[in-house]
Length: 140
Ligand code: ATP
Ligand code: MG
Image (cartoon, rainbow, N blue to C red; front, side, top):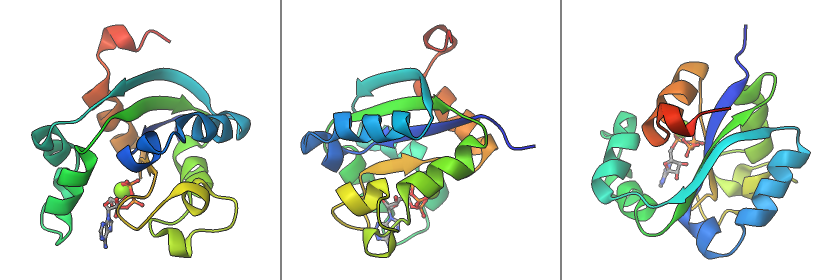
């Protein structure tokens, strides 16, 4: 059975552009409840740890640099079928391929600076939420 939580980040490009509020509005209007949230900033080392699964990919070094280039918002979201429905809401990794009306189509600048992150499985949603939020911060 699909789980009911996913994890997201509003990435540095969207935060810097002042799009966090508009993106959170789209997320809430799509039926997701915010159950934990904070504004923070990754160091290059922490970005490297978060994206460790991509460490063999050619874009890894640039991705770590970009993800630590400015503040982000991290959040745990709740909804039925959360992981799949959230990836539908954000659209394809490359905004050029993202469906009309998706968050990346509207706000992403490039395949790298693509506005938002969405977990790709229930297991990773839990790992990523735990990466950012302690038990005390996850009271809901
Ligand atoms: P995310 O994990 O951030 O939700 P995703 O699951 O759609 O994105 P992944 O394949 O997991 O895509 O890639 C992680 C991130 O690495 C992308 O969101 C993007 O910022 C960056 N990225 C992916 N592919 C490329 C690429 N070809 N060139 C540059 N950056 C890329
Ligand atoms: Mg991914």
